[in-house]
Length: 114
Image (cartoon, rainbow, N blue to C red; front, side, top):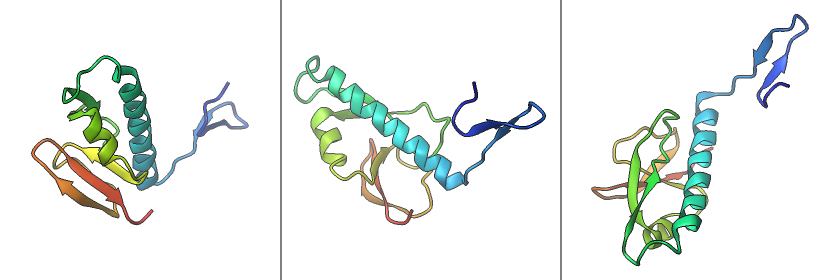
């Protein structure tokens, strides 16, 4: 069985379908955001109001293991728009992203060009 993005060539070798760097970075950001949304749902009943949760950094670096500490209310407020991601200040961004809000703990970035 061959994973999505891969195909088996006539000679039996696996061929990797490469996408552009921005496309891969955008896909990774969406995955990080999906994980964060699930995390928020899981911890909702377990954290007190105002308590911070360590969410994954949603930057363009697919190897990033950074965490952004936000309350659940902050997370929901910052993600009202689907084209918005929350990253550690100074972490990589995809071309076309602009910083909407910058704080000591996080930056809120929006994709304007895709």
